[in-house]
Image 1 (tube, one colour):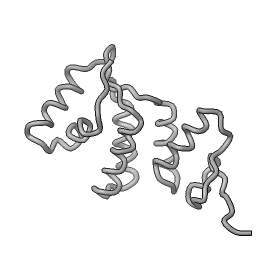
Image 2 (image 1 turned 90 degrees about the vertical axis):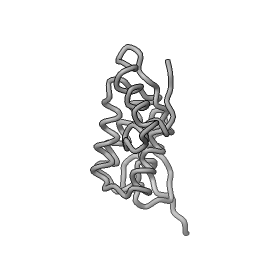
Image 3 (image 1 turned 120 degrees about the vertical axis):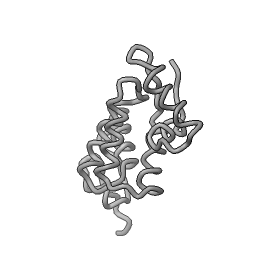
Image 4 (image 1 turned 45 degrees about the vertical axis):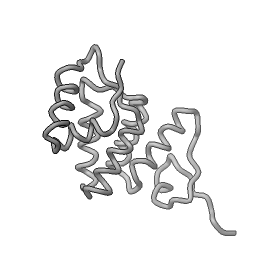
Length: 135
């Protein structure tokens, strides 16, 4: 199995580099297949989220659609698809960030009942419990 880095996904999604984008497209769409998919580490999807949300300022719904499209791509496989899917689903519906939801989903997969946080937005989800910062 081969894995791909975030920069390959970026060139694939943005199609913005005349030299690298066609290579990324050929690799993902033509060379990989369902029987020999490319592994996308969780961290690569986190970096894609940050690019879309912070640098490109895409709206939440569009980011969720792009993440779902990657998760559903037959030629890609993921380090922890269950946690990533739960995180994208929660992100599409909730107020907190994708990374917050991924932390909670990964923690739950590891056996945690919930994740303790000071983040009030994240604490709106049943996956989190708000820690009090005062007496």
